[in-house]
Image 1 (cartoon, helix red, strand yellow):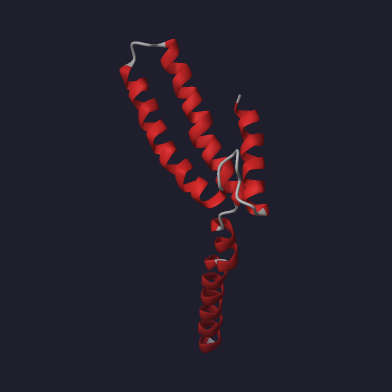
Image 2: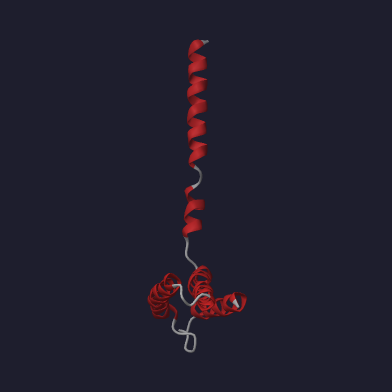
Amino acid sequence: MKKLMTILVAFLCVSLLLVSCGNEDDKKKEKVITPESEAKKIVDECACGLMELQRKAIEDPTNEKLQKEAEELDEKCEKKVKSLEGKYGSYDEPKDSDVAKKFWEVVEEEMKKCN
């Protein structure tokens, strides 16, 4: 009886351990970067974030911290946009692929939400 209980407890512990680890495929799916997710991220971080910072800086022109943050974000976003333009082309001249066209469509949609 004691051996049976030991085996059952060991089986239960192993089962709990395996279940708690989860499915690796689900974790990989969450990390997949799509053109849509890149577009939403760049618009949210850069366009909307920069507009909000500039709006606050206009309301309080003496706040140098806000102005500095806006300048830093602008520089950071310029680098991101250039790297994405290398991948998807520019807004005026997207690369000739469905992925690039989808990226710029999502950028346009997200920009409308930002205003």
